[in-house]
Image (tube, rainbow, N blue to C red; front, side):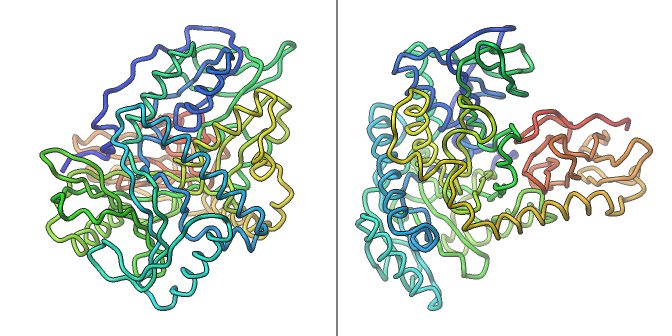
Length: 504
C-alpha cells in the first residue's frame, strides 16, 4: 500500500504546470477554483466568447475534485422523497431534471476524452428491515420526479439486501483525467489558467471588481467563487454550510468479482453508510473504491481508527481484496439538501457562487457550470430559482441552521476554555497536541525525525481552535472545515491565511 494519503486519481495522472499570476492583470471573468465547478463554468464562458482567467490556489483538480469517489449519478442517496416533503413535488421534479441535464452534458463531454467512462447502474440499498419502507418510498418519489427508478431485492453485491432502489444508465469515470481534458479544452477556447495563486479577497472598483491574490490584483467584470467552500464571508453562507470528511480505501480485486453496480447503503446498518464502486486498474485488475466512516471535519475522533474500520469492513465484504491506496475526501452540505448556485448574497450583482454539493459533486459541480454560465452571460436558466443562494425556502430548514451554528458557537467558546495540555517537550515522534503558552494556544507536532513543528492553534478564518487529524497529519477546524498542514499551510478553505508560526 502507498505510504501517503494521495488519491488514486491524483497518483495516476501528471501534475499540471501553469504559471502563477505575474502581478496585476485584467480579465473579463475571474473564476476562482480549479475543480469541476470552476472548470465547467470557465469552459462554457470561454466558448461563449468571454475573456476568462481561472485561478487555482494549488494545481488543477488536486483539491476536492481530485479526491472524490467520482460516482456520476442523479441518485443522491435517499433524496427525492425528502425534497418532495421539504420543498414540494415540483422542486423534486426540477431537481431530477436539472441533475439529468448535468449528467447528459458530462456524458457528452467525457465521451470525447480519455477518462475511463463506464456506464453502470446506481443502487441505494438497505440490509435492515426497518429501512425497507423508506427505500420503497424513495423509489415512488423518484418515479414521480420523472426518473426510471426500480424496486429490487437483489443486486450484484456479494451480500444480500432487503430492498434497493436501482437507477440504470448512470456513470463512473476517472475524474482527474476528465478535468484535465476540460482544462485543455478551456485553454484551446482562449482561456487562461493561473495556478499556485491564492485568492484572498474580492473588492469593488470603479470599473468592476478586483480579486486580491498573493501574487497581485486581478481586475475583472465578474467573479465566480467555485472554491468548494466559499472563502468570502459575505452572504453568511458559512452559517448555512457544514463540512464533513469521508475516509476512502481502494483495493484491487479480480475483474470477475466486480459487482457491476455502484452502490451506497442507507446508513442504518452498524458502521453507518458505505459506498462502493470500481475502476480499471493495472494488470487486468479492478480497483474497488470503498467510502465510509463519515465525520464532521475537525471532530475529536481518531481518523486512523476510521481508516482501520473501513479496511476491516472491506475485507469482510470482499475477502482477499488487496488495499493499495487510501485517502479522505471533504464534502460541504447545505441545510436543505439543495446546493447554493447563483448570485452571492450581499456581494453585488457580479459575484457568483457554487457550493453545498452535499457529497454529490460530479453532477452538482457540472450543473453549477451550466447555471452560472447562463447567469453571467445574462441568459435565463430554468433552474436558477431552485438553487438561488438567497432562496426563500431556506426558512423551512431554519432549525438545522440554528443547530449547526449552535455547534459552531460551542466550538468557538469551548475551544478557548478547554484546558490545553502541558509538557510539549514530552511529545513522542508522531504525536501532537494543543498547548497553552505565553503567545497563546500552540498546536505542536513532533515528526519521526524528532523535529517539533509549532503553529498557532487559532484558525485564521474565525478563530476556532483547531484539532489534530491523526490520519492525515493535519490541523482541522471544527467550526467551518478549514484544514492546515502541520507546518501551517492552508489545505482546505474557507481560511485563506496559514496558521501563524510559533517558536518551538
